[in-house]
Image (cartoon, rainbow, N blue to C red; front, side, top):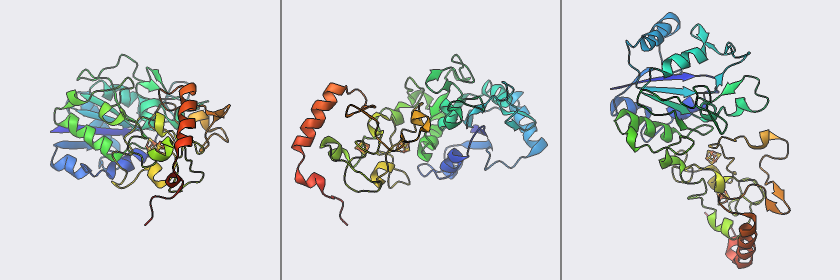
Length: 320
Ligand code: SF4
Ligand code: SF4
C-alpha cells in the first residue's frame, strides 16, 4: 500500500482533470491493482475544514506516512514572500508544502507550474511563483537545489500544460510498486522514458519536414507546421506522438503546432504579440532551430530537401 497526497497551489486544476482521464492505467486501476491509497486529492478527497487539517497534521507528525506527495500548480510566495495570496487549510500553502515535502518518500511536481513556475511565473511574476525545485530553467525553486525526499531523490518533474494523464499514472505505478530505480531522470529531473525523445518523434508530418513542405493554416492535413506556424516539435522533449492523447491523436497530427509546453521556457517569448503560432526568423533562418542543428547545416538541409521534394509531398496523403 502506498499513501498518496495531492495538493494544489497556483493552479487551474488542468493536471487534476488530465489525471482523472488516465487510461493506462486509470485512476481506479491505481487503487484496485497497484495499491495506491489516496489520502487526499482536491477533486477526490472527502475531508474538509478541521478534518483536513487533522489529516495533514497527522502526516507532518509522522502518524500517517506519506509515500508520494504530488504537487500541482506553482508555489505562490506573494505578497513579499509571505505566501498569503494562497492560503489553504488555515495557513499559506507554501508552509504546508515545506512541511509535507520533508516527510514524503517521493515528491512529484505535476505540470509546468509545479515543475518550473509555468505561466504564473512569467515576468513580472506578480504572484512570486516558483516551481518546486526550479524557477524556469534555474535550479533551486521553492524547495532549494539540495532538496531530497526521504527516498533520496530530488523532485520528479512531470511537466506539460497539462501533463498527459498516462505520464502521471505510469510514474505513480513505478513509485508505488518499488520501481523508482527504473526512473532515470534527465538534467531537468524529468523521467527519460517520456522526455528523452522529441514531440517530432512519431509525428505524421516528418516527411513534409524533410522536404520542407509547409502547412500554412491550422488543421491542414498536409505540410509541416515548423516553417510558418512555429511548431516546436523538433526541440521539445515529449512523447506526444508516441503516447497519443486520448489514445488517438496529438496536436501536430490534428494540424496544431506544438507550443513546447514541456520545456521550462514555456510559454515562449512571454507571449508577445506576433510571436505565438508564428515561426520567428532571422535572415530567413528560424530563430529556434531543431535541437542540435546549426544555421549552416539547416540551410544546406532545407535547400536539399526543397530541391528533392516529390510532387506527392505537396498533396494531401490522408484522403478518407
Ligand atoms: S515540426 Fe512539428 S509538424 Fe513538423 S514534423 Fe516536426 S513535430 Fe511534426
Ligand atoms: S504537442 Fe507540444 S504543446 Fe502539445 S502537449 Fe505535447 S509537448 Fe505540449
